[in-house]
Image 1 (cartoon, rainbow, N blue to C red):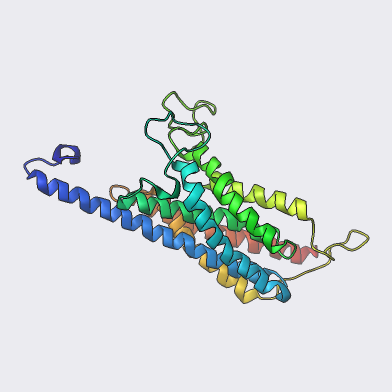
Image 2: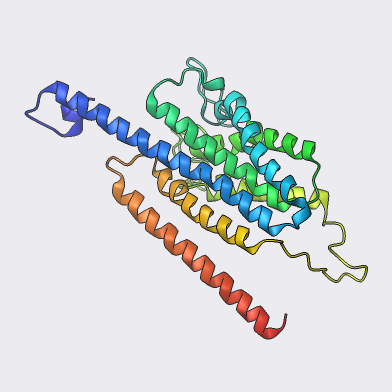
Length: 291
């Protein structure tokens, strides 16, 4: 990229090259900082889940959340990123799965490495969604097997479909988008991350069934309240903070994109606040009506 590409005239070409490097460093730093915030959401999920289960299951669900991130890190490193975004020079692009960059082969520039880490944090969030859905009734080994499989194969496939130029659901296909002529434009992963994790959680809950003693013989629901409200609230606020990396960070660059980033941060704030108010309103209504 030269001065003409940057819209600059009358300046030495070396200065434009330096400016391009500085812009790239800014974007890499922005993406890394966003990745750190998204990964911090793992602490939020851990606190939220720990506070929502009975005290006897606290250590179990905490260690599952920790190893979720550990197992997912290697699953994403070895297989996940390659199946999601990988390309191989000389090979025809695949609309279903990526085909290269396994174990980060060929990724060396600072922005590419930052992008890799940011996307790993997303994959970790998708996997952790399930921990609450199957809390208190899943074998440790089975959960770790699920975590590896989702991060290495299932989630990467959905990412490739939607967030790459070759994916069959993506809006950027060279020959035109296939889904209703427009493709699926998912800015921050409401479908790619959260719907994938949500469906996995739904299927997991269906397979393992309810917790022992959750329902009485006549079908009545037996209360099983969480043991720590402070942990639930702490987890909620940590997740709120993490969303400032998840949503604004999805712009993927801060240079020339700061307005979108700032507006996304404001939207995230209002969405979180609105969700909190609606939840409190629903709780108050149910309490008042005695249901």
